[in-house]
Image (cartoon, rainbow over all chains, first blue to last red; front, side, top):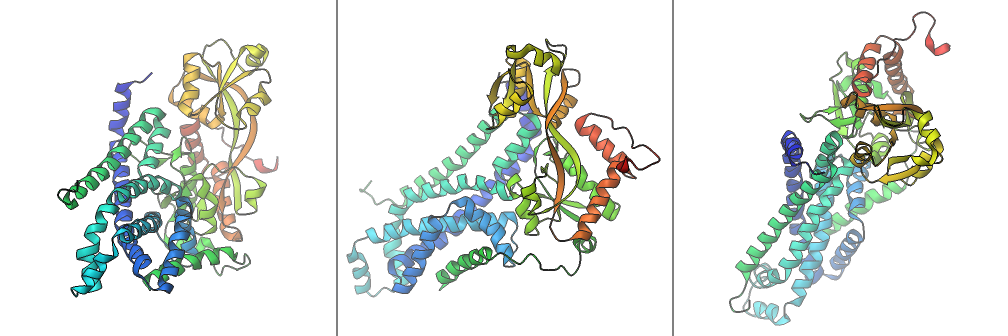
Length: 223
Length: 282
């Protein structure tokens, strides 16, 4: 039933569509992960070291976002924002929704990692006269990073998969491009498998990157 | 502080969305003036359903819905290419109209009472229905033969909650095989696992157009559905304009444009409207 020749032929015809879709998926995921990680780190810091009022506000933000389906966030950032006069393109709205979602998850990861660091580290840093900024960058972050990485890889892969939801607001990402191709040539099984393989490659890349950073930050002798 | 801002930036729009905006807000000028001033039409449509709205091999949107948009663009600017397409899923058809993301949506939208309460429908441009496709020169010649065969026949259909009831409405005794993708229902017919395919007549027409001589329409249609474009409610000028453009494409000066599109996507030649007394009043 599987006809390799005709599949390869159709794939060649659709090569640009597939590449553009792949590029869009990678771009959206990368932007969401980068912004989400930056904001998420701040969220994690606020949750761990913020004052009571700040903690409460940020806690409300993370709980609200984590308790909302990504699809709802996507629709909200596209439709609800426009009712208050902020007109985002589907691409921007998609990046915003995924970045917000990512930040809440990274925030929790960072909070957990920071809280797992023994109190003595913070006290020692204070004792030798480091500012909070120096303490975070030189003492806490390097230790927290080892805790963060495995779960961060998980969240990053989740973002790539969540990017498929953006087809609802008309972002031509890989899955929508694949569906467009299938609607023309009816080779559904072949092209869905192919798209699945591409998603795997992206996520495998993220995993390799995570492993690489893990190796770089590993403490000798602690494996 | 930045965190606070983020939190409230999310909460505020949610609150606003809960308070429904007054529908009576009178538009100062019509959408018609706005579109003319902009110099191009913005139409919402999909990209994954042949022959309605789908991508050609060189990645351009094409299909019958697309041509309907071009008819309106031609009426507006004398140029069918002065149109910009907003890619949207079927779920986004109504929201994108009500939130002004598009001027018009033509995306094989079935006219229903519920939808007509949310948006304004134009005049219809196509009547969809379910049909049966057979192999040319096969065991059964047409619908009458299928019906006479009773229990002996098997119909392949796209998986759906209503699929079984839909087929039984036309062929009460036939066995129904549901498949979960479009290519499989056609494959079932091709390989002989099914005697006929039951699906939208437009899909059958498009499939047969691409494979001339291999298949035939059984010549029976049921489950009628009206397809029309949608615009925002409360702008009679704009609605009238679009209606006029579509009407003249089906009966007047742009008939050739409509008929050519109909031939391309459904493979049928349309007889020109009768000259003399207007066909609408017969």
